[in-house]
Image (tube, rainbow, N blue to C red; front, side, top):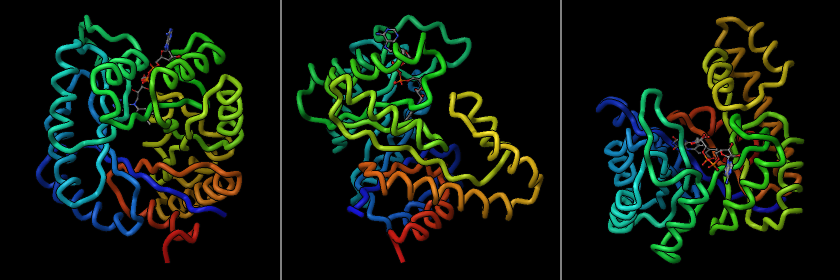
Amino acid sequence: MTHTSLSIEFFPPKSAEGAEKLRAVRQALYVLRPQFCSVTYGAGGSTQAGTLSTLNEILAEEVPAASHFSCIGATRDSVRQQLAEFKAMGIRRLVALRGDLPSGYGGGGEFHYASDLVAFIRAETGQSFAIEVAAYPEIHPQARSAEADLQAFATKVKAGADSAITQYFYNSDAYFRFVEDAQRLGVEVPIVPGIMPITSSAQLLRFSDACGAEIPRWIRLRLQGYGDDVASIKAFGLEVVTDLCDQLRSAGAPGLHFYSMNQSASTLAICRNLGLIS
Ligand code: FAD
């Protein structure tokens, strides 16, 4: 099996205590030698300060940092300013997204889709940033159709993306089919599977309903069957996600992007099972 490049995603902590905990989590995860660590960005800039301070900490730890950057509700001027700030900070990689408007937010931005943002970043900053975009092997929940979503993904890549990270999934066939279909449309960039460790049943089921990731029936029922037995949920989750990563790596997935949920234990346990660390 070839070398698997790893990346790890965090969200900006909401408190000083959360920030302190995240520092320890990052130190534990750096044993994986991630290609980069990314930090999410609330739509409409809602987490901007937390995102930037977390990115600054990662850069100070001498680890390549990528900022997620969502454009919904933004203007060309505000995006231009934010790009200048990223550049001045030493950020060299962005995950360019449309984002979702918080409910009650009026909108009125100048960008409609992530493809608009990708094209704008390239036009304004040339090759200053490596650009990642989001991919949805199980189809984005607002897509008009599966084919329209795939076309939109290809358009977004052709606007200038270097690589893509998928929404998480537990059915590897959906991923392999998506990669094949995208390649058929001329997409040549790596499409890195996003991996969500399973540590809690209620949280995962709630989250997945909202973002359109499917929890296969057998996994859902097994999780429900464990009730409050967290140890069994974690043991089962570790087995399922290790198997998934094994399948993905064996079939040549170009890397693994871990949705760490600001925790280290499950990501480390999966990587240990995969033989990526001892
Ligand atoms: P787009 O690629 O613009 O697609 C959005 C929808 O529009 C899709 O249904 C697509 O089919 C459709 N579409 C696209 N182009 C066209 C077109 N030309 N005509 C008609 N329809 C079109 N959210 C955050 O708020 N912050 C984050 O940090 C964040 N990080 C994420 C990281 C990853 C790896 C992933 C997978 C998702 C992330 N999200 C994040 C969630 C993301 O913002 C939402 O899924 C959002 O609804 C879509 O963003 P997008 O960039 O994929 O949008």
